[in-house]
Amino acid sequence: MAFGQSVRYATEMSDSIVPAPHSLAKKPLAEAIFELRWALRPGDFPGIQDDPGFRILVGRYYDKIRNDYGTTVDLPAARVPESMTPHAVRHQFRAGQNQWPLTQIGPGVVTFNETKAYTWEGFSTNVSKIVNALFTAYPTDIVPLIPIQIMLRYVNTVLYNPLEADKPLLQFLGDNLHTSLVMEPLLFDEPDQANSPSNIMLTLSYKLDTIQGSGSLLFVNGEQEGKPAIVWEINIMTKEGNTPKIPEDINAWIVKAHAIAEKWFFTLCRGDLLGRFEGSDEK
Image (cartoon, rainbow, N blue to C red):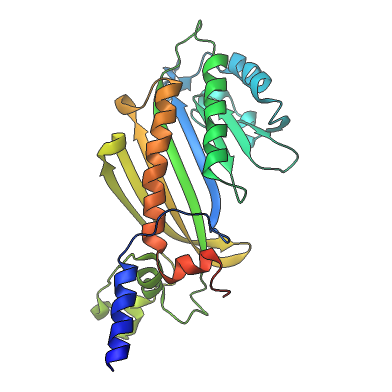
């Protein structure tokens, strides 16, 4: 009995310690996304916004990134007038046909996207390149480039089928992602139902002084390679007057935002789930 208590105490103690960031053999990352938005001008009609420099920007931007992202794809938004799709990506530039990473651009917006091949060193280097390409390509003689929103977003997936799992959904979140949600059992004829919703869409947002912005967590049902899963996102954002305005400050922001996202990731999945991502659990 004493041995069992000591083992449980050691487990609880280790579970309360946030692991140092490290590489994972089976990382759950579905996509890492950097997005930068800049100010648009009011159009001729209410609700319409224009990016006067966009048409010139597209060609100049492609010239600067074509050696790395030479495959072009016109997205559905490209069929609609630019003034009707503010801050919506219209053109995609990939490393090759259906290959990652990629960068996207539209009126008032540019993104960089990576998937399973993600490493922080590679991601941050490529983001710096596309930011520099944007600032050197944008026709500031026509209109100034004024960033108004910057975002770093990580989309992760964890296999979970509520119809087959040995733990109900809310218990799974609590045990594996350290996110506790309690529903009132009196809502149901069978009190155990309170812990077993078939679907979830939970968003939590917090003010973050270190980036003068906010951090959000999203938990929602989704898929991983066609199988039922929990999608959990970490979104770090700064907008409006606090958005960095020059490439050097944008790069500094990215470093701070990544440090926050990385801490949140390892804090949430510490314990058994992290062991699975490390490859120590073959389930």
